Structures are given as C-alpha cells and as structure tokens.
Length: 173
Image 1 (spheres, helix red, strand yellow):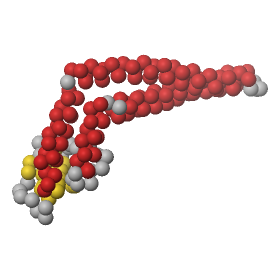
Image 2 (cartoon, one colour):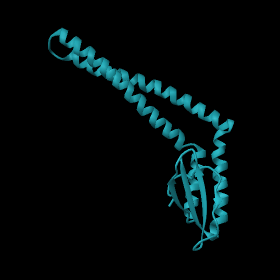
Image 3 (cartoon, helix red, strand yellow):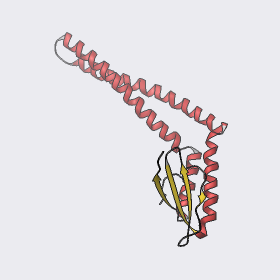
Image 4 (cartoon, one colour):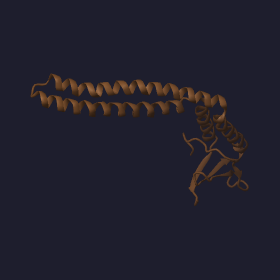
C-alpha cells in the first residue's frame, strides 16, 4: 500500500489488460534505479490516471518562479534564525563553564585554564548543536508546510484510498 509515501514523478504506462479485476501501471525511475508497479481496481483506473497527472503537474509547480521566490525567502528567514540561535547557544555553552570556573574554589591558574578550555569547548558545542537543530528542524518545517508538499501528500492519500497497491523493485544501472 502507498500509505504516506509520495508518488514518484514520471510518466506511467498501462501494462497490458486487467488481471483479476486490476489494471497494472508501470513507472521506471532511472535516476533512482527503481521500477514502480501499480495495480488499481479496474473501475478506479481512470481516476488513478487523472490523479497521477495531477501529481506530475503539482510536482512541476515546484520549479515555478513564485515557488522558488517563496523558498528563497523562507531560506533567508531560516538563516536569520540560525544566526540568533547559534549566538545564544555559543554564549550559554561558553558562559556556563566560565561561571563554574569563576565561582569555584581552587587555584587561580587551574580555574583560568579549565574555565577557558571549558568555555571554548562549551561555546563550540553550543554553537554547533543549536546550528544543527535549527537547520534540521527549519528545513523539515519548510518542506512539510509547503502547499506543494501538502498537495502531493493529499494526492498520494487519494491514490491509496482508491485501492492502489505499489511494488518497488531495484533495477540495474
């Protein structure tokens, strides 16, 4: 069953006549070296073909100037968020070891050395960690919340509701 998987983009071809009340369609994705075989109840074959055409049209809309402009703007916003969170993460990561070194008892030279090393390590880890988390979550949200992605998921769910079954095979390059 297709489930939540998006339909691949490409031209499907009808493979022969219906068998056991199901029409078979095939799609070969050379870029991924995969062959997709879909079986659809015969009475839903026309609907599936229209859905698949809508899938291709929707996927092509990703390359429209409006969609590209929107992605660039979302990327700028994400970049600004990353800068802010990275700065905060590095300050917290550096500040905690430095504060511990300042307020601990012990020899001054040990506190200075370990506080400095801890601040460098903590600041670096804080910056890297917040950068990674902000980017990964930001990109997921950009993709997941895009109208195009939501439309493609909707099409995939409709195909699944039609009783479409899919088999994927690896093909040799």
